[in-house]
Amino acid sequence: MRLWMRNYFKHPVENIRQAKPIVPGRLYRNFGNICKAVPMTASELRYVKECAGYEALSPYLLKDLDKSGNGLSSLRELQQKGAEDAVPVRCNLCDFYKYGIPCPVHNVLADGSIVCDTHRYIIIKHISYVK
Image (cartoon, rainbow, N blue to C red):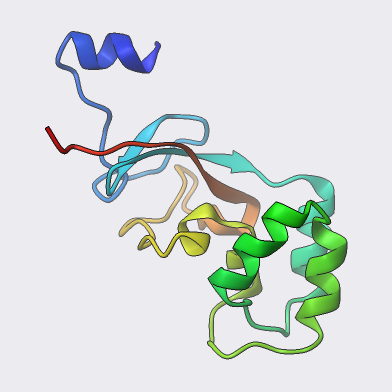
C-alpha cells in the first residue's frame, strides 16, 4: 500500500523500535524517517565476510564515500587503515549508522536470526513532524 494512502486514512507506519520481528521489505518509521530492511547483495555479503576482523568507519567518512560513487572498492581500501569505534563492519552498509540513528530494539527476523547478518537498513524518505 502506498505511504500517502496509509497517512490519509490515519493508519500510521509501524515504528521499527516496537516491531518484533522485523519483516524485510515492510515500511517502518524510525525517528522521523521511513525505512525498510533489504537483503544484502552478494558483493556486500562478500565485503562483510572479508572485513570481519575490522571495525566500522566513521559515519562522516561514509557520507563522503556515498557522494563519490566509488562504492565497495573504496570501502575495502579505507577499511584496512582502521577505525576509531568498536562497531561491526556491517554497519558501514547501514543508513541508520550513516545518519547517526539508533538501531531497532528488537533486531531479529521471524526465524530468530539477526537482521544485520543478511540484510541492511535503508532510509527511503526523511520526513519531519514539524507543523
